[in-house]
Length: 223
Image 1: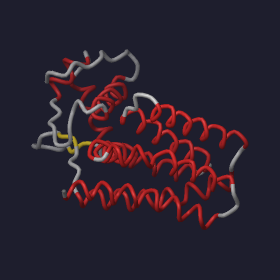
Image 2: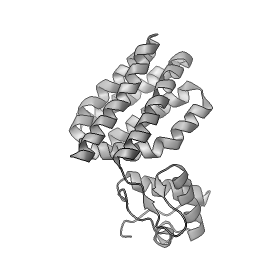
Image 3: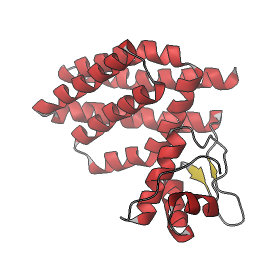
Image 4: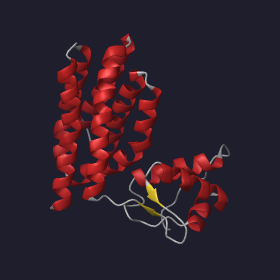
C-alpha cells in the first residue's frame, strides 16, 4: 500500500482504525473494489492487526466493505443493483426524517441548516471541491435525522450512511457540474419546506431529492 495514513491516536483503537480507514476510502485513497490488507493497514496506522481486524468488522457492518473467511477484504463496488437498493431505502428514510424533523423542529434547526447551505454556496462561489460539497451535503442530512428525534430512525440512517457517502462520491466524480449546479437549490428548497406546514410536499421533495441522485448515478454507471 503506497498511500500514507496518519497514525492512530491511543483511544479505542478498533474504532480509531475504522475511522481512519473510512476517511481514506471517502478521500478516494481506496477505490471501490480495492483490497484492504490487514498487515499493510496495521503498519500504516501503527496499531496491531487485531485492532485493524476489529475496525474492518465495524466497516463491514456499515456495508462499506466486503469481508469474510477465506476471501479478500475489499471496498464495496458501486453496482446498479446496490444503488437501487441503497437509494430506495434512503428515500423512505429521508421522507420520514424530513416530516419528523418538521413536526419536532426546535428554533435552532433552521439556522443550522441555513448555515450549511450558505457554506455550500461559499464553496461553489470559490474554488469548489466536490469532496467538501459532499461533506456539507451529508452533514445537512445528519442534522435532519438528529432533529427528527427518533433514535431508531437515526440508527437506520447510520446503517447506510457510509454506503450513501461512497455512492454519492461516485456520483460527484462522474457528474460534478450537474451536482454542483443543483446542490444549493435542492437544499434551500428542503429548508423552505421544513419551515412550512406542508407535510405532503416536503415528503415528495425529500423523495425526489434522493431519486434525482439515483437517476444521475445510474446514468453514469451505464454510460
